[in-house]
Figure 1: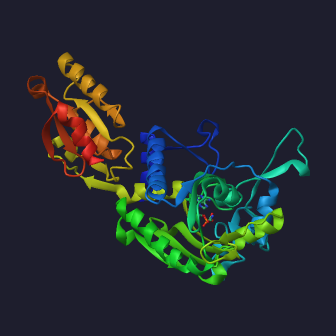
Figure 2: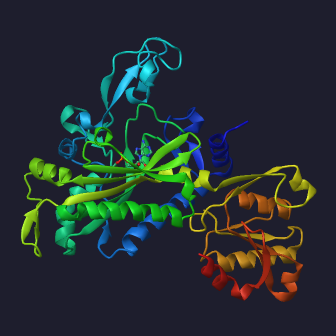
Figure 3: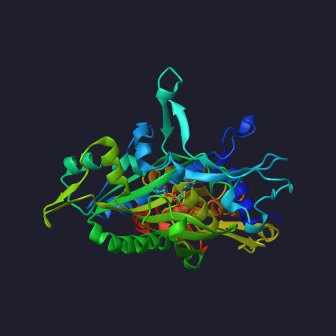
Length: 443
Ligand code: GAP
């Protein structure tokens, strides 16, 4: 029997959410491609976060910094030293590699796969290297960013000068990050190329603790607003010895995945680690003059950092339901296990399906296409005429489409359609002229 993760992986490939990278060449490990439905859903996740941050907070602005930056950035941030390295051990027999801290306490010298002897642990830096320009020499070596927030810190002065914002204020950014993970895995949970949504609040050091508590609650509220089951989320305070090298305080938001409770987001009080180090390495004055208190200080940074791919997987798992024998009473459905993806409406890749009752009646198909043309500028729609109507509903349920419109013979007489609710399976008739207003009210 496949477990939930295997079922999700299969659904993703079958329906075009996610494919393995470079699959026709045998696949490229730890990288994934988002298909037609995947890219829609990913964009919906990012839009929800972006709107939440920038539209609902007048003191938060956005940024889109470059992936490649001066190598000095990574010296200053501490990412080129032990702070951003994992313990790597290798099996002398099968040559599999493991993260030292993931091995069980009592078997740190034995390979969990083949029982062979393990090498001594050595430090392995996770930064990915590349070269800029035509010559591949040390001087032209740069790094792919390992976290998006460094692009925010190096633009702190630019944003301050160009927006005239006053502390406390925040900058957020969405973008790719790269880490040479020793043990990527669990599908898109841990990858070597992934996307982050990071928010950095610059504040008076005296206020950092309060903002930290505020933001950790705000982030939990966002997940709950998007329908994630409360019992599958928890906040975990990270003790000093396990915190990231820059964190004065760290709380992880964890989700109960099929493979156990795992981090989805980190909330960090980074203190003045970043701005003071960038000031030291760049020689620029990154202190802030506070006109209200007449003090000059390095602002403290409170950060919320989440991986888009990681929560993409979480949303799929949390929404996934199987109904043995099906929800409908038809004999055809009874034989099957029906899959229902109860995604929050705002995250669903397709919002509305448009289905003529049958495809061999020209007038129905013509009318259905007319409805499709009317709706499609406003909502991401899918027109489908292939197979029985029951089968088409199930295809839409499986990808989480909240509403299905059916164009039947009554439509031709009364100019109305049935609108079917994914979760309740309730159907009601609605005039075509009222459809857009009705659907706008749903999203
Ligand atoms: N700027 C802080 C920072 O990067 P982090 O805890 O290293 O903190 C934040 O990463 C989030 O980025 C994680 O909670 C996770 O959601 C995501 N993330 C980190 N490494 C990842 C990986 N290898 N694959 C997918 N997501 C990852």
